[in-house]
Length: 314
Image (cartoon, rainbow, N blue to C red; front, side):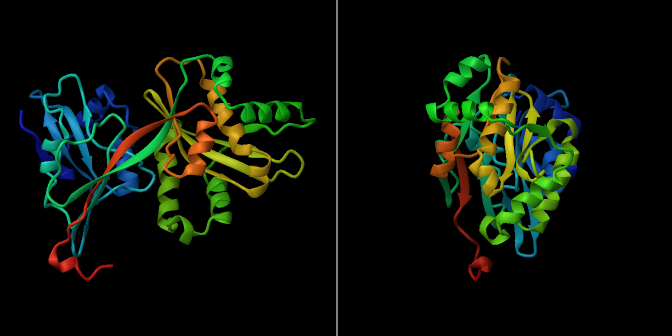
């Protein structure tokens, strides 16, 4: 059946979620609840009907409508979207989906998922760029995974265990302390995150429910929060979505302890990946690689042409 472009009100959400449950690409960001929170319930989609009232494939389109026209921009806290196919999909090439997006938007920036190959052609005025995340498979037992850490990280873990009162990783009850820690040392102007973004992050944690896990590290003497991280658990994925650490926490390697704890807990789980959700910045890439994680490419799409009524924008 031919592909269809659907407005938000036309999307069958039950069919959407059923398609995601069968999708060959496990992309947690494509959940309806995720898009509702991070983009608002205005997102649209290109879908492949399966002939039985469901969808054989879906391509989320995060849309917001402005005075100057519709924009399709990657929502915050949503690293990847792109094409999700099932075994019933007949339309497996990106080109057909992208053609239905051409000339619809005043601005467009989309990030595909790591299972989407580079499209062989793009609409006129579109540009393709390479991006990188890091993955670590968790199928092996912890002792095997630990041997893949760099010698420096293994040494730090041994030193931590030999401390008289080692730092402990504990479960967090709310995203608020983690967000407050992040904002305490990263001004909004440096991160391009505004108040509305942090409100959306808190709402996302609430909407995800048991999918969201917050882990924290506190100083054993004074109770100071040294580091925290938000992990999202989904089918075949644990996503390292958001994290913060104080200067004292960095000196005591608290971020390393958080990630090591997640790896230790979930080691030996077949088909499970830890997605570090980043790696384009060299220092961050090195940090992730120290756990034995491997770089995985994905692609971003940008519409570089602007209609005449946007030429004044800088």
